[in-house]
Image (cartoon, rainbow, N blue to C red):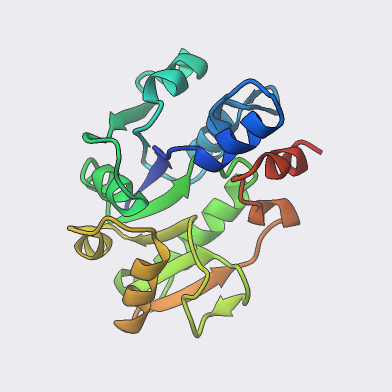
Length: 217
């Protein structure tokens, strides 16, 4: 069974921009802020590329030129970049556009601002998904509350591994955040399995500037 990675990097960056303005900082997209001698997005891409995937797609939208100018050329021929058109769409649309550009059985779905999620954790999600009793009715996801078999999809988001074609059916014609869609999938009887984080920082969401400061501590 094949697995492709979709990395979404298409957001408005509005909360980070607001924080930067309030602190009189240069306005920079959070995805191109420095982390581990790279950018946040490059670190996410590298961790993803090191996992057991067959290909990697990065979905861009808002500030796509700024992002592409800031990241290394080393990804040419290794990562496929696509741009949302129009760019002002929800996360579900970005994810659908990425899934439309792969043919794999499964998709590892990651957001570009998740540089702390390790290759080890990605591989664990892939392993649990593909070894499930019914892989095509299973979502393997980084836990937010419980570990193991989950009894709710409340509060869940990326990263996760899901069967590509089935996931696309839920995303098609939606323009929303991800959690309502995950709750709908759960209600339809899919098995959700929460994967334990390797360390606390894997659960960090980089939305505000203080989140970024916590990241680089």
